Length: 190
Image (tube, rainbow, N blue to C red; front, side, top):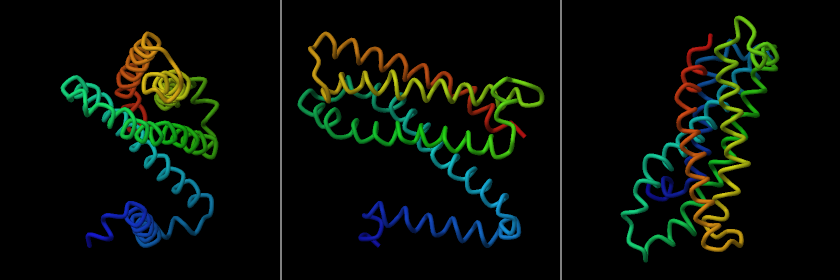
């Protein structure tokens, strides 16, 4: 058991196999129609990557940022050089894949344009989609470029690093703020 649970790839593969078994075993009648199957798989992937994205957003805001001032100086490089870059890798790619699968669902179900233009009866999901798009933009074009400077992954002097850290923090907190109504809109659209 230690060997299995000690291997993240094995656990993910087993989780994927189990999910397919659940999909086919409990929802198999809906999978006879290829369109319904594609929609169900896109929803599942959208939800999976959304949970990963928002989970990491909350990790950064509820755990890492408030804890960093309490970490002894000699231990901070471990976070900045190893933990944060790895978490930011999954964070930004989960954001992108959440958006890709979410837009795939909306276009597949033919409500993308009405939702994005906030037409009835798609205003709620449209607001959620716009909030998600703004958040993904923040991840890729504001948080990540500034985190690269703040963490020393790209060249920057100390003043630029401090400014970049503050900018990344502000937009990470902005995403935390936007995630609350975004989650409401996504969960309550039907």
